[in-house]
Length: 471
Ligand code: GLU
Image (cartoon, rainbow, N blue to C red):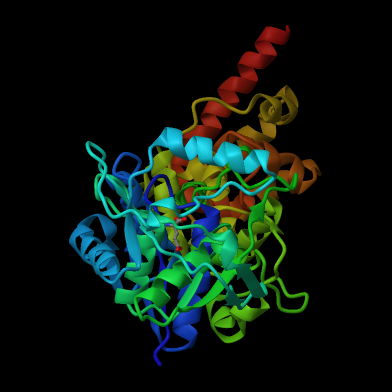
């Protein structure tokens, strides 16, 4: 049988880390088995579902490279089909109308609690034949009263539920709208889903879904319930722990392969390895080897992974995300004709594309002021004379190249018996505004002659003003 998995998010917010991991595992499982990965948007909660959230899910999955073969299907467009199945269950005697009022249900539960029993619906409307005047009934599923429902979970193992603990679930509200467990069942059935991989917060729904599937004569899929994700304080991962939205990571300058790698490691491992490119995951991942216990999300590790993938990628692959980050900072990516050497010069030490853009922004946008600390330390009156000499030497160059730039600086320091860094660092501060940049000859070469001279002149003015103030 062809493997068919699905990702079934409710579009009530952004695509978060937990959802993305479920999607990744389902996608991997489908791809490893030459199966199909179905995308289904569970948007029956009209009040909480938004088109923006749907878009964020589609964009997030696309960015991660988790392509789907079918869908997106929208539950909101399948109302007729759900009604049909509810009707079918009703006609088949597997569902019934329940007219109980809220007050009745409250009293029932209170009595059960008083007797030390677990509060649950006692099935009192099962026998009812007459409607109740003025009350629109809900529809309840007639759940088996005896025996067990056993979930053979690929992660949690055999989980048996006593059917006496599972009461008659509402499958249609009094306005006729279907409930979550019913829509999931109908969709998993209609869409021929063979493998459900989802969060283990749904494990308790599974026996109910299996019972409904069985009542419909459908074979339940195989289930794998992945454990929760916690923050480093061992509390459920939430916004308190930093970015949890997948697209926020994109905004923050992460590469999708770093996120995919990090997501895969949430609950799954393979020896002590940390680095898993997509191909490695396709080869090594196995849903059965996902652990049962909650996994802890480690932001630092993700940053480390991101640095790894930034170093590993061809500079050409980083051009687009780098441009995005520059634009966000008011930089003009066109200011430098060839971005590749700029990227190459920043790749080694940047952990995110955002950091890369921060460090390299001075190539693409003039800075407003010098970093105070760096300027104080490096642009001292004593450096005025050698800096002026470098400026004049550079201005006299006919051919602007890294080597020529280097030679000018070298001559100036040699003549004054200075260390190279004593002049190079002030130049760096002068042209970049701060204390960090690629090697100085590379920096100046990329910046171009006129910008270099302009910025050196400005730094010289700064030094003179400073000296004047000190007098
Ligand atoms: N829509 C459900 C959720 O977002 C998932 C349902 C399922 O995977 O069965 O939690």
